[in-house]
Amino acid sequence: MKISKIKKINEKIPDWVKLPFGNLIRHQLISNSVFVEQYRRLESMTMKSTEDKIEILKQCLVNAYTHTTYYRNLFNRIGFNPEEFSDFKQIERIPILTKEVLQREYLNIAADNIDNYYEVTTGGTSGKPTKVLMDKDAIYREWAFVYHYWSEYGYDYKVSRLATLRGVDFNGKKYKYNPLYAEIRLNPFLMGESTIVDYIKKIKSFHADFLYGYPSAVYNFCRLCLEKNIDIQEQFKAVFLISENLYPYQENVITAVTQAPIAMFYGHSERAVFAEKKEGTEYIFNAQYGYTEIGENNEIIATGFINHKMPLIRYLVDDVAMPMNDGTYKILGHHTSEVLYGKEGIQISMAALNFHDDSFDGVEAYQFVQNTIGKCELHIVGEPLNGISVLAKRVQRKLGENIECRVIQKKQIEYTKRGKYKMVIQNCKICRGGAKLNYSYNNQKYSQSFTELRTIIKKVA
Image: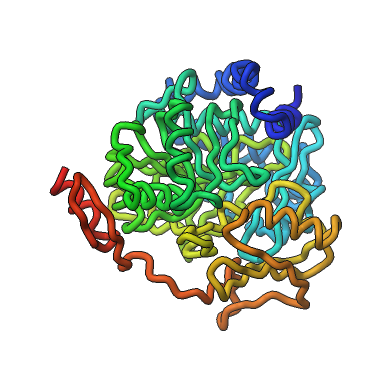
């Protein structure tokens, strides 16, 4: 069965139907031959020689030339012969692939030898959604990399379970069971003072031993646990964070409340780059996932190996990587500080509002504008193919009851004075790191800033 159909079935059927078939659905992922082979390869991984790495990159270039119109025409035009590739520096002759070029040459970049594939959509710095065709095996390879990295923190993909805080379509519910990834998904948009106890009960009944999600959502979860004096120190073996930058005030609260190590990997929907953050250091790019260059302005330029349907060669990623003295990189994401503020102090990150469907088809650009806590506007340029009312309903369904959203058509979206696009024009000023929080811990009451919590808890524990 095609992975796209498996995902749709998994998303559409209700939980009471999923429960009896949970193991069977999960089996589709972890027993797939592509997943197993990739995971075993990572387990037995040894440092490849420079010649081996060059050969892997060469094969990627040869396949792109052989099976896509875009790269065949491009390589011929610049006189680049992939069969003669023998040095990493030679790849710099190939022009950068921007999102604009990807959108314009969309069909020409698609490989003609892959028939089983699906489409993913992601936002970007231009304000226009970017689409990429993904071969069915890419998702199996992707999760092999993720699970192998998590295994360093005790995760066992055969038995471990996740409590996940991410923005998916919950249809107004607080949580939903997702057997494909062995997780209970918790709605971050409905998580507040009045619901946090229900969330904890669901996590415990599901026997989740790892916490997974966006830093902003996981931080809010931990903040609410502090406010309600809920002890979860023995619940999770590790906390897995994705898609956003992690700020010190968030890390302090998450670590203090869970008493568990934090692991973060860096990737994106286009699946051309994967970096792993090691304890006490910054990120290391995984050379088996793709070839990564750092540009003159520290921009990430990625050539991916795991998606054969739409090869992205020298693809310009929105984020930047700052080199550190130990050979690692500090990665700064383009969603920095881009959040919407809902009721009860809930923060909704833009990472939670990616739509991997046709919601934004026909929309040339979009931007959220917030002037009042609990309310926002979605400004769009263009005409949604499904209509404005359908788009508004889908966006509101993701935001839930904590933020009221109104969709407004504009002739153009707003840019900064330097001509840069921001996905959120945030006009609500909220102090995050310095705000005081009143809470009790071990029968003692405190009023401290978030940045002081870690020290306080260690002192009284």
